[in-house]
Length: 255
Image (cartoon, rainbow, N blue to C red):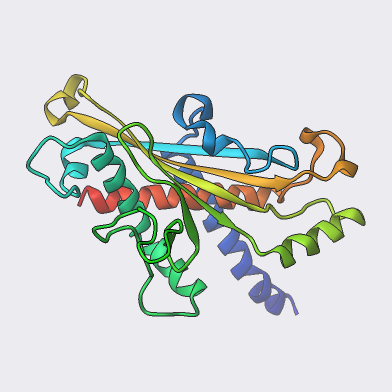
């Protein structure tokens, strides 16, 4: 009986411990940075401020040599514009293996991941409909194209049915509920020179990945800081996945 119990509990314990170690590693490499100095207002504001709020804004960054990102621009041998850098970084994130697999899963295992912003039209509106461009088989929708002044901003959403289901549970005392959706911002800061031993490797840029979760306001739950959200452990996994995407994109660029 004891042996069977050990066989039953050991795999989930190992999986949980491995996940914890993996998250610790990512958290040490990519600490959070303050939203007010590293994101735009449109990321931080919900679409409907009277009925929605944004309790979670997470932003992570990495410093890489400018030349590695410049190599992904359309004209890698000439000094890049800020728009070109913002576009190249967004494309680098959207073409990471995890997002490609996620897009294929969401599209019922199609072989292609869908639009990743890598066509000549990049993130401009759909030329056939004039509507905002849908990325990764509709997993994300472009809210703002990258420019010299502002980075790419996209939104994603959760279907109403599961959100309302958890809202119903929450009204009966369940301690958590789902977000409506969220936004991602993919920005580049710099370039700037290196310091000390890194000076010959410069100039550098700071690439960032920002995530904001939007929730419906439920008046019966009281003030905004008392509103129910996803569990803390799930929120940590969300943050870990964002860090993982950043890590994958940086590794791909620096190969």
